[in-house]
Amino acid sequence: PTGLNDLITVMKTALTDKNKNLVRIVLSFLNKLFESLGTNSKNFASYLIPNILMNLSDNNKFLREDAVKSIEIYIDQGLFESLLPYIN
Image 1: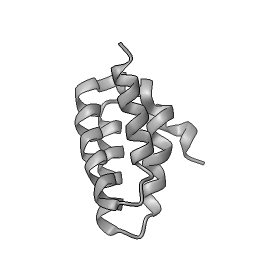
Image 2 (image 1 turned 135 degrees about the vertical axis):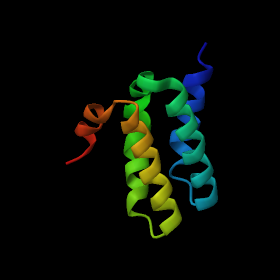
Image 3 (image 1 turned 30 degrees about the vertical axis):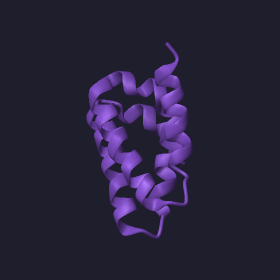
Image 4 (image 1 turned 90 degrees about the vertical axis):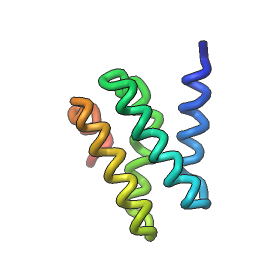
């Protein structure tokens, strides 16, 4: 059952795509994934969080807002402490 791992790998790559609409769709999907997985979302933090945080500095206002929403949903799962290694 590597399907979820393969999906996460594709999502990680898509978060850095030049097509900002695709990135926004991926962030929306990840929001639903984080909500579904709950605290198990932290298993994928090392793959996804750095690329989500990278989108916070994008020029596209809507993309930045979507990235903030993804982080908020991640934190709402009780996973704030798992974000700390990625914030300097």
